Length: 376
Image (cartoon, rainbow, N blue to C red):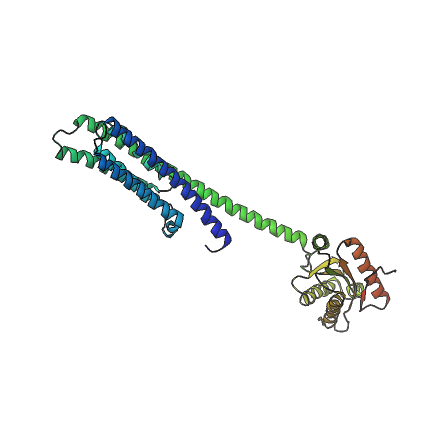
């Protein structure tokens, strides 16, 4: 995962893996302390050199695992937490310890339970049951070895009780692990279903927002949404920036409606929206202001750039030929102004509106600038 989000997920997962490893390492320290306590009390008949070598190997194995996790090599494996490997390693070390124990074997036997519980949430039910079978076979092997090789093994009844207790414990843990995994599977399915519902709701909300922001006839932004966007652009301006603002009115549109009908008038509005959008940049905002009136916001532009843009829109629309309107020359009038840092949107719209009125009064089909207040 090379994306920032992917790296964040990996780092978070690696942090959790290290926390789980720290818990396992702490458990090893506790067991080593109990082992040396058994040596001191005489319950563990293990020669001192063997005990020292065994303890050193346990520490070396944990340091090696720590190096794997810290270096990130564990990410190369299907299970980055190496849970099954850690469980099997712990089973091996505990089996080695039990093989040397005599009177305290039944007490240390209970340590198989936390080893298996370490994999409760990471191992699936089959792998967990397999680890439980390995535990049972290891303990049977210890006792079989003693019965075959030692002259005076532990009493059979005592060993049988330990085997039965271990079998019951392992069977219960396996059943419980299966139950936990089944519940986690159901929760995962519900989470996926909930995520799908949330995605659907978010999609519906976006559609509703688009419907609320869009003019149904022209598919342009409507007046309300334009004013919101323009206000946001105005508040985000730098002191040295200027934005272009233009009000556009289609000339003699009411005559077209009256003479040719509203269907033709609608086609004129739709055609204007299409050809004008094709003349603008992606960052420019075109909206239907009401009726046959439209408004444009041209971010980061000068007076000359705004004038050229509006003139281009006027000429493109004048070249439009619609079926059924071949004898009608389409034209539009534009009132232009600039938005400055700290400007008021309503005041700027009034300047553009007064410039538009001046364009109509001067004969229509033209672009008039209202850089300053224009008196009607």
